[in-house]
Image (cartoon, rainbow, N blue to C red; front, side):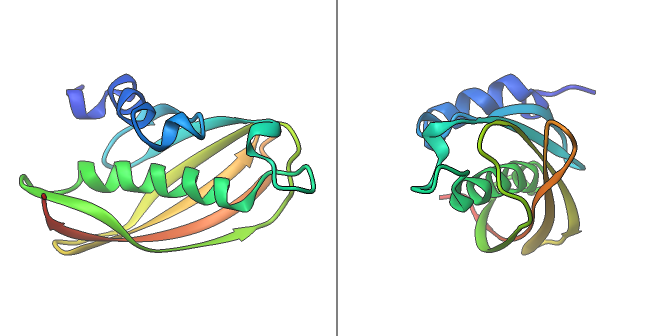
Length: 138
């Protein structure tokens, strides 16, 4: 069953109106149970040493988790980031990153998502966990 909220194109369009302008990311799959996003690694997202900036991995992770979390919210509620952690396992100079976010806990007032980021060779780049508060929509 495909609804507008599960349409990866709609989510990509929304993303490009905000942080996605600075960090180009794409949605590949969007559902309540799993969100898959990808992005290219190049000099636009490097830190001064010429490697992927760890903060970019965190933006990718939180973008995926927040999208899935919002799909799981009751009408009139939204999910907002409350805490995120990330373990950077492998550096990356160029290529592709793919983030897979899946819920660990979906509650009435909070959600916890696990995000695994791998490169185009399926090598682990980053693991992250994101806690989101579920609040009334502004």
